[in-house]
Length: 574
Picture 1: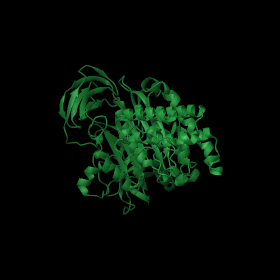
Picture 2: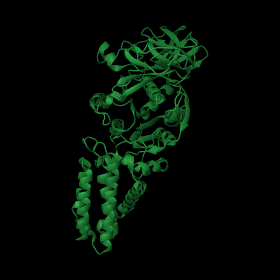
Picture 3: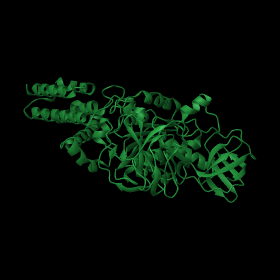
Picture 4: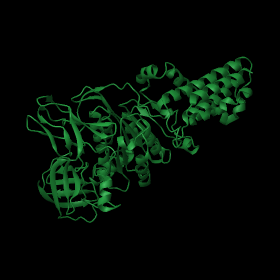
């Protein structure tokens, strides 16, 4: 470890002299040994971004280069943990120092004292390579943690043993002398290698009707949720984290308000996983980095989150990563860039904003991990908070270039209390064609036709609303008034969903299909009734259609839908 001294300080960016580090080496800064990372080297001067508050440190204090990049500890014990942006466990820090984290504090990402029941699945003499599974641990009930050979190691197993071990105990050795432990470290800025990337073929089922039906996201895909303040980004992200059918959830609260993050931290441990009936926290990793935490750690939190997600993907799990919000991450980059006196790009963001966002989203995908034939995937859902909801700003535009699903939140819809407030006319999904064979096979051959029909009616309604606003709905032809009626049913029954209702918070695909099918049947029956001379005001007066909304809040929805369909048929025939 080489030592130097502090020369200049500008907020979280400090300049040191007397050390010879490599780019992205971690350094300990000042008498309090604050953690920092080398981000620029100019001759004898080393520029370091510090992950903690630098108030009170002064030139002349020591700087020590550790010679290692920023790494995370990967091993059993991560699920159910709550970390800050640089993988320090917050519950451990609270025990040490109360509600306010002091500077220069270090705590390992994993529990070094806990013993895990390790079962070896390889024998001595077996050839292994990076990513090979050497053993298994039941980390939480029903969740098997697979212990992997680090990606940069290979050789023959010289010895291996099963039993109870801590993460630092040696459980085996390779013939080259490398000691195998339950954990290994990995640099956060380096993507973990894979054998091959695959095309996405199955949807990430979210339980939210508007996402699953109109704008599906594939497992291994990337989605963006841009929206103004108060439009429901965080609730949408939390709904996806709670109900999506991924095996593991990594939730990164990056620069969010403290009260929102507190809600997540208090709510998640109490939620029950609908699949297993156990606490949802059993398969979740939370990374909390609120807006009042040091700005540099915010920049690191996204990388910490995606590296943890890649580790679980390498075990063959499907992982959903929620990044809330990438705008705050970009703002952290802008702040650091301005302190470095770099040439600013558009709106003051650094010129490399687009490439950094692309590098992050490119770490998603459906892959065959190293050393195994079983596939794993990471789906990344990034919230974007454009100032004033203006998506022409650089972060939103750079994000839309690399994501294939765009869920646009609309403040007008949220003001009308239509939630989730996704604008169905501006949003899109480029995965629809890839996923249609899956829906055809697993839900219904009619799925794609019904989705197209729903979208067609909503688009028709948008055109008609311009006329309605000018001359009123009575001026429309009967067929057009019927279109407005069916569109209202689609909006109120299919697209609106109550995140806080115990039944409506999650909607299975079969139920979504049944709702679409019933609305489509009503539309056909009403058109047929009109052909045989019925007037639109008589159709508007039918009562069964007004009860369709009840379907969302009942468990035995099939029975209710059958009953309502028969009633509608009866009313439209008389």
